[in-house]
Length: 296
Image 1 (cartoon, rainbow, N blue to C red):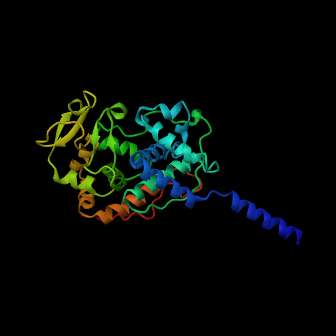
Image 2 (image 1 turned 120 degrees about the horizontal axis):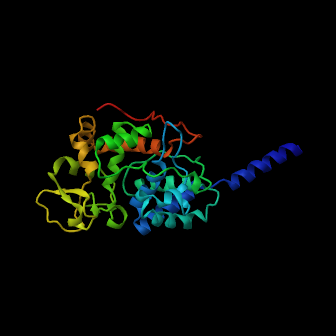
Image 3 (image 1 turned 60 degrees about the vertical axis):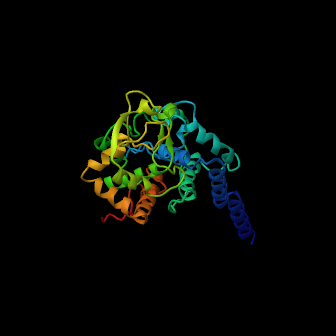
């Protein structure tokens, strides 16, 4: 009887100590609504997970940007200190939740709160222990390049061409800031609403290339604007990596499909985003994506 009582007490203690993820979700959702910070939370979760290398098994969601050196100093992560600071307030209330889980869940909740699809999520990531656990700079996409570069980056993570296009659909929310990326402007006219407008605009607008400096960005960077648009800071723009998908024989069919069918985009984005958030995590399935519907 004493042994049974001890086991019961241990189970109760473990249950009480376990993080309340439902409450955590609510707090993140409240943050997204209060601060209108959904896009930058998605960017934080993607840049944490997007360092994964399937061949070496390094990188992936580990919360490595929380240190003052290493990944936090990479150029692609400029401005993400804002997102980390917003979530740090919540982290203090949930000390048992790894940073990697918190940032990942924040991205998922942000998608859902802005009108996007439900995304399957589970805890189980482990945090990097120091800045020395960071990977080298250069594993994230360079927006000035084209589809071969996108394939180099995403195929390294064991993500395929369809998943590249689906995940690119996250550009339907958010905006670029010159001090962070060298580009200035949103992708769509409703940067806090998650839908398939990004793909609709890609296929219906006649895009022309201009120097980013004409819109407040860095001189020498290229962006694309609607033909005939007045070149004023804040108008919707596309990046070279966005427009490049239009002329790629393997990616263009998925762009067209997602422009025509928001439900299918939501389904495929949800599947690919879950896979991205679980890359290289030993507790999960690794690099497979059993839920991706591959038929056009």
